[in-house]
Structures are given as structure tokens and as C-alpha cells.
Image (tube, rainbow, N blue to C red; front, side):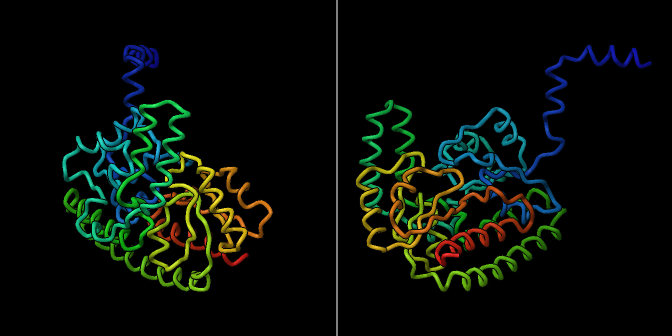
Length: 323
């Protein structure tokens, strides 16, 4: 009998066996990046799995989909992303999805009035530098990639507790349409998320209140929504596009402000630890911290978004307080 089974197994093409094991038994909510996955995980908990396209350590600014990613998107119950200005890698695949399975957060009617414009003067300076950078490197795709970052609005929308709440409501609505039999669980999940978010928001507000007036620099312009919500006082950022090192003029401006003690802290990121931060802060009393805009060390659970916000708050507070 064993001999017959072995013969049958060998008659199947190896590719077919591999495909059978590779395909998920069920579809899932597919989120573009981890913080969006955090929000989705809170609502989908106990209903359907949540997967994240962007691996830890990768940047949303330059990711390219793998064939396995494209397959996951096609099989998804729902795809949740910010929009083409943030995740250009998703634009084509998302366009092929039916509207019921595609949630673009930046296009939500309640989100549009909350969008923060990028700093035009700073954008212009970085754009000049990007052109110099492109002259040194190859033209074509690189130039198109840089252009993607010079947009009208800041698209790091997951940094806003209010936009996160609206996103959770929208995910709840989409999943309710797809899985009406799970209404009770989806309703309970949304209620719990909103309650925990409101509680964390108060705690973070209290934690950051003592450092509201302390100046600092962030590595790239990812935190505006969080900073505005909690009334923080950023002195500026090194770069708009983290793939592009800041130019000499920008570094000189930052260095001057650090020497004049207009900032107490400079923040790097786990994905980007540029030597320019060490160079520009050398010989000053400025402290160095790290902000994680993608929640790299946090696993997807129903309370992971609240953990993400609280971790970010602690990262700000520890450096600004000098702890």
C-alpha cells in the first residue's frame, strides 16, 4: 500500500505540489504596511487573519511586490492601504480589485479634511537636492521615484489617532459587508478598539505634555500627524524622502540650530541609521534617539496599534526628557 502511495505522489508535478502548499487555505485581510495591519488586526481579531505585505526592515518608499505578494492581494478578503502617493507599489494590483475588497484610507471622505500639507519651502529645498542627486546617479526611474515623494500632502496617515479610528470604522464596515455572519464579533472588536484608543490617547497626552516645548529634529518627515495631535515642537527634518541623503545646505542649517541649542534631540529610525545624524550632532550636547514609524518590533494582535502609539510616545519622551 505504501508503495502505491509513493508512486501516486511522484505522478503529481512538483510545481503543483508546491503550489498546493503555498496557497493559503483561506483568504485574509492584507495590509500594505505594519501600522495599517495593527488597525486591521484589532477589527478582524477572531474573524479573519491579517497579513502585512511590507516585511520588517523594508521601507514603504521603495518596496516592489513579489509574485507571492500579488497572489496574496488577489486572494484577499480585503486590501487596506494608504493610497498611491504612499504605496506606489500597490497601485496596479489595487486597481484590479473590486471596490468591496479595496480600502484606500487617503480617499475616505472623513480623512480628506484632516490631511496635512507638506512644507513647501522644505520640499522645494529637498527637490533641488534630489535633482543634484539624480545628476550624479542614473536618470529615468530614479527621477520618477523621487518625484513620487514631492506630493501635496503628507501621507503618513497612520500616525494620526483620529485617522486610525476612522480607518477602523471603515475596515469594520467593509468586513461586515463581506462577513455579515460575524457582526457581533466585529461590533465588539470596534467598540473595544475605540475605547482602548481613547484611553491610550489620554495617557500619551499626559506623558508628552512636559516635553511639548522642547525642540528636536526627526530624520524624515513622517511624524506630522502625531506631532500635531499631541502639540509637539519639531524643529524640522533631515529629509522628505529617506532614500535620499540630505544636502550640505540642509545639514548646515540643522548644525547651526543644534549649536545654538534650539533642539535637544535628534531622532534616527530603525530602517535608516544615517551617518549624517552622528556627524551633524558631533561636539554638541544634543541627545540621539530612535523613532520607529513602522512598529518593527511589535507583532500583530488586537491591541498592537495602541502599543505602537504608546511606544512612539515613550521614544519621544525618553530622549526629550534626557532619560
